[in-house]
Structure formats: structure tokens, C-alpha cells
Amino acid sequence: MSHRRILIWVAMLWAGATGLHAQAPSQVTTTTVRGRVEVIGGEGKGKTRNGAIPGTVVWLMPVTGEGGETTMAMPNPPASPPANPRLVQKNKSFDPHILVVPVGSMVEFPNHDPFFHNVFSLFEGKRFDLGLYEAGTTRMVRFDRLGISYIFCNIHPEMSAVVIAMATPLYAISSREGQLSLAGVPYGRYMLHVWSEGMGPENEQPFTREITIAENTSSLGVIRVPEANGQRMAHKNKYGREYDEPTPNNSSTGNTSPSRITTRQTPTVWARN
Image (tube, rainbow, N blue to C red; front, side, top):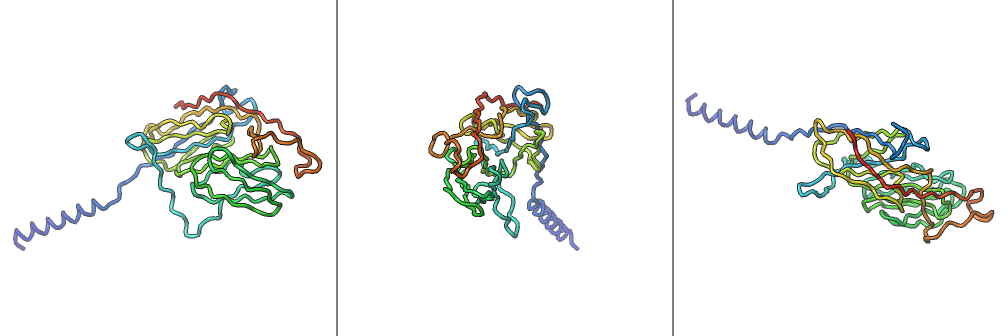
């Protein structure tokens, strides 16, 4: 083989290797981000005056170079689409109390109680009124708007739930002990969003702040939230009026008039590493 042919052959090998290198996918470094929820003015780690950590949701939205937020690609759907998420009405309550869904999701509202319900949401987020529907039936709502929807029943004031529609797979719902864990978070800049049960529809709005996730900064630290006084969020009925007292002739027979306590604390949500 001549010297010139050897040079050409080496050049071809080099070009091929360079092309393969250019086509190789870049490695994205990810980490698990953890944090802990505590109540403002609580009685120490993991304790509150009411003995329970408020349900808290945190989520991360990537930040662009200009400081704005951008949506993230959601995980590829499985070959067989899963059933629609459900907010079940049973024993005059919603299960689950907090539901996180990708924006655009269809959510079912089955009535498993032996009486009528009238599910509605007239606050920020998805606004709807499902009207009266009987035991054993269901209604569906598409949550096509990003944000927080506060869900109530127009018959039973003690019923409440929250649906959060988001455009990111990077979120966590706190455990009963207040622990938070977000797996598979790529390094980068994010806007941290925090919602907690003390931030009701007529109270404080979700907290946001910019954070950076990197090799040595992968902790949310301690997130302090307002205390949630009881299990019911303060609200009026779908007509903007106080609920009527229960009578023996309506479908809420056996209810007692709930004490609707409004949390008015000023939130001080912050992180401590």
C-alpha cells in the first residue's frame, strides 16, 4: 500500500470516528433533590400545634437565559394509556385530597356516596360546575389550564380537594412527616413553586423563587409553610354565599355545621441548607 493511500485511509477512519462522536447523545447529569416541610412557628422538627404537617406540593420549572420559565417534556406515554386519574367522592370527602396531573388531563369525579353531590371549582385554575349527580354516576373534567384548582361540593361544605395541573414531571407531594423527594432532576436553573394547604383559595398564593441544582446544591433544605387549621378550606358555595344550615329534608342529613376557619398567616417560605 502506497504512502498516499495509507494517508487517505487514516483520514477516512478519523472522519468516521469524528462523525460517530458528533452523533453520540450527550450525557445529562441528574440527581435526587430532597427537602423537608416545617410549619411557621411550629414546635420543632416535624411537629405542629395540630400534630400534622400540611399537605405540600413542590415543583420545578426550567428557567431560560432571560429569566423566564419554560415547560418540560413529559415522559413518553405507555403503549396502553393508563386510566384517567380520579377524584372519588366517598364518605362526604374527596380521595385523594391532593391530586397532581399533567395539564390537559381528563379527571373523573365518580360519586360513591348514596346521595347527590354537586362538584364545582370557581376559583383560579379550571373553573367548572358539574351540577347535581346521583350515587353511582360520574362526571369528567379536562384540566386544560395550568394552575391550582380548588374543588368543593355545593351541598357538603366540609368537602374540599385540590387539583394542580402542571407542565413538568419534576414535582413531589410531601409525606405525612413532611419529607420531599424529586428523582431524576437534571442540573440547571429552575423556578421552585411551593403550594401548601395553608394557602387556600381566599388566602396566600403559591410561593416561587429561583434555585440552581448542581453537584453541591441539590437540597431544598427546610421549606416553611403556614399552618393549616383543620381539614376544611374556607370557602362559600358556588353562588358566593354562606352554606345553608343542614335540614332533615336535604341530602346532607346528619351533617353538623362545619367551623370554617380561614388561615390568614403571612407565609414565610424559605429554604435552609
